[in-house]
Amino acid sequence: MIYVTSDLHGYPLEKFIDMLKSVNFSEADTLYILGDVIDRGKDGIKLLKWCMQQDNVEFILGNHEAMLLSCDFLFDEITDSSIASLNGKKLDIFSNWQANGGMPTIEALSAMSKEEIKYILEYLREAPLFEAISVGDRDFILCHSGLGNFSKDKKLSQYTPHELLWTRPTLYTDYFDNGITVIFGHTPTVFLGEKYTRRACFSETWINIDTGAALGYAPMLLRLDDMKAFYF
Image 1 (tube, rainbow, N blue to C red):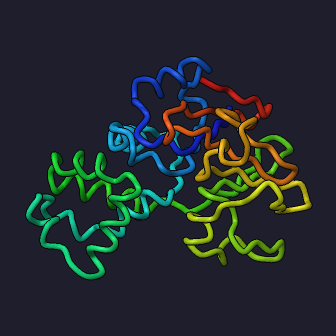
Image 2: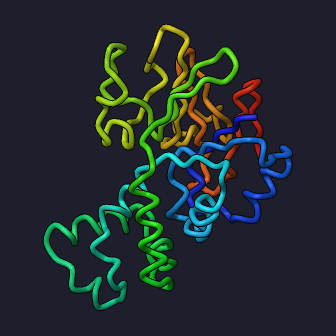
């Protein structure tokens, strides 16, 4: 079975593992995580390290992991004094990450060795921005935020990181008309309307599966084999 989830944002690791157990997720199954496992909640780095240890978990980069990578200059030594010494462009980049919920991640990294941090950074640098997969007779494009500046003639390799990490599709956004479904997160579905609170939003051409872990709700799982949604 093939499952997807997104935007865990530091959701408690034990609760997430319980979610997987509840659907009988096994080594024979595959889970795609569409970015943003870190920031806001306390267990982001725990979740990321867990992902790194699973052979059947495929991680796609999110904008919060991209913000972490943009602050790689911090990681020689994360201390109050090293942060206080930042200025100019580096300070702007760090402040943006901090304002977007980065402090729990920074605090977790500050307790780790340089080698552990290096391993995490290498994993994130190698993470793809999208995956195109087929499950049964259905075709899917998996990415973090949707396809910015979309054109049906545009190759996936031509999309910029910003278009794949920071896009916010609306209810009126349409993608492919050839049966390909785009699945993403990034924008909590409740922002698309109250009726989507803690629920996925399905359109004719895309599915948003960010059920709002960043807002205190639980993430969801979508099983692509039969398109069954699991809510917690």
